[in-house]
Amino acid sequence: MLNEFKKFISRGNVVELAVGIIIGAAFTGIVNSLVKDMLMPPIGWIMGGIDFSNYFISLSGGRYDSLAAAEAAGAATINYGRFINALINFLIVSGALFLIVRQVNRLHFMHKAEAGPSRQEVLLEEIRDALRARAATPDTAPPPDRPA
Image (cartoon, rainbow, N blue to C red):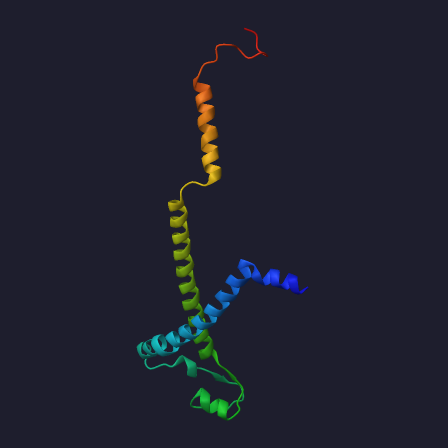
């Protein structure tokens, strides 16, 4: 069982997946900071000083000046402002990943084009050329199954 686990772990896809998850976790911190510290303040300023993270609905019926005050009082709240921030995070992450995957695919295609034809393509071209040469040279004797 230990050998099977070693074989499973040493496969390339598993290692690549682990690296992707680690990079994704680090990338999440960067995106969260980008949204919270860079994007939301100008958006809030444009909208008249609105801070999305303080948008909430108090389910306990009390009136609170901020989400922090409601949480300190132990009030049950629906924090839709935090949801808006999470939605913006998602859109930024998915857009960034789209651009990254698109660029990697473009580089992969360019690398494949530079590598030249594959062995299979070369063999198929040789077969095609041999068939063309054979068709171009007239046979002097008819095939045995056809009458002369």
